[in-house]
Length: 182
Image (cartoon, rainbow, N blue to C red; front, side):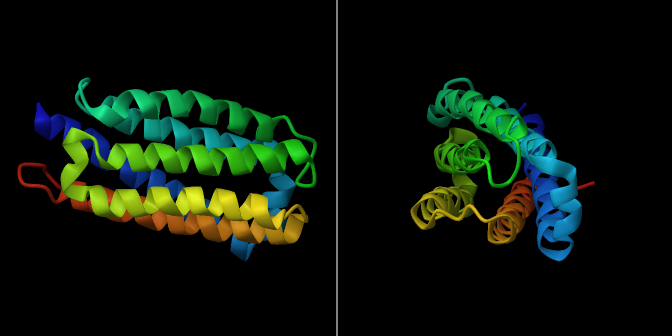
């Protein structure tokens, strides 16, 4: 059964990483496309990434310390992603604070997942990813980056880095003994 859980965790991390990398590249390389999607699409991406984090948490043992906290933070992340979805634009404070809240909450979630029983062997890279999330959310709030171009560039760079860390984590989990790498 551990093999099945690790496979689910690895696939969730890999998928989350792929979505992060693609979105990050689009936001940095072709910002007009992402702006054209509107905040609803950006909020939907945030909700999708949070949902994948919840799937990863659900694939840990029910007794794992990080599971309940991760699921609670997933629910809070849904609220942050929803705030981003229903905001009127990139200049809208609801979008900005929803994004900063999502970043911070996802960072806490990542950090708590790093110390879950099933993922202890990979806790270093997962914990660093969580710390980066929290750090970026705090920096975003402290610098009050509400102008659309710098906000989108910052978001794109961050989500790209988030995607890379998720992909690395997924690869490490997939390379675990007894987990097939198809």
